[in-house]
Image (tube, rainbow, N blue to C red; front, side):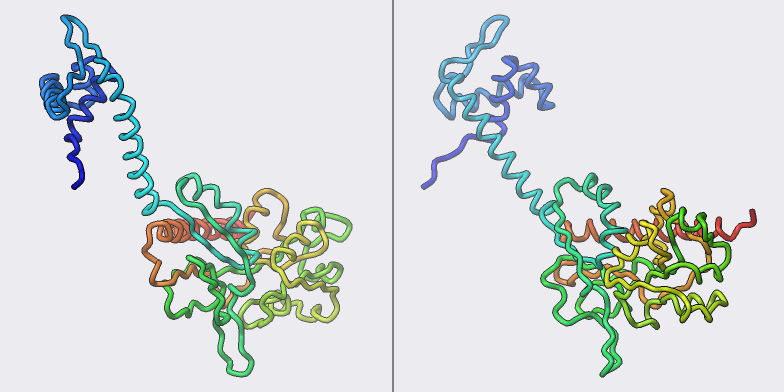
Length: 330
């Protein structure tokens, strides 16, 4: 048989009164009357069959038994609080694992993560990147979809594709438009970029991460749209199997890249990249946040998922504003 414990309210009254050496101050802290504190102390003393306080005319002092009991009661309350906080963190905190395409992770997600971590200090993120987060085209079947077995137990995935992911809660983030970008010094240098025809004197940087041109537009489509399709076999080209590397090459001044506008918005705003021609070409792929349905409503996962959707909405609004400014007459 377990020993009986004293009432919790009596222990709280004792701890506050002993810490303040005042029934009045303890009452104010616990939002009760001094008489209520006195009553709880009396109950505790009767329960323990001990005197915990010496009640003097204008003062209150602990008896030796009360002085010995105080630190143990305080330790008990500290342990109780720690247990409550641990349970709370289990619901609202913990580790969330996320995987995204390399260029999305490096150019869009990482620069924004500080906003999320500051708002959710109890959530620890584990971020990975993989090209497996990009839908693949099966030439034999004509099927476009995720690589089988690509989730690796992640809590949340950012996918670039068509959004057909059975067994997952799926939310569309945005479908990027692609624009030419280059280092400003390249455009304003000895071989300036004034019209699309000027691309003939520059190197075109290709992102070969998604080779199916019907899904992610490439330079061939952009040149045709710009009315300079004749350049496609007359211009120097360099190919990268990583979108982040192709953009790094553009920032370094090695050529002109065709980039998803959301991936370069910060670089354009900060002057690291320039959009020499505002003509854009849409993608049939979009970025989606996908979560296994079994864990989609877990508080930690839901917090990150909700934040991503809100950030994507801000991105879409900012993109609309940027395009409107580019189209506005000078």
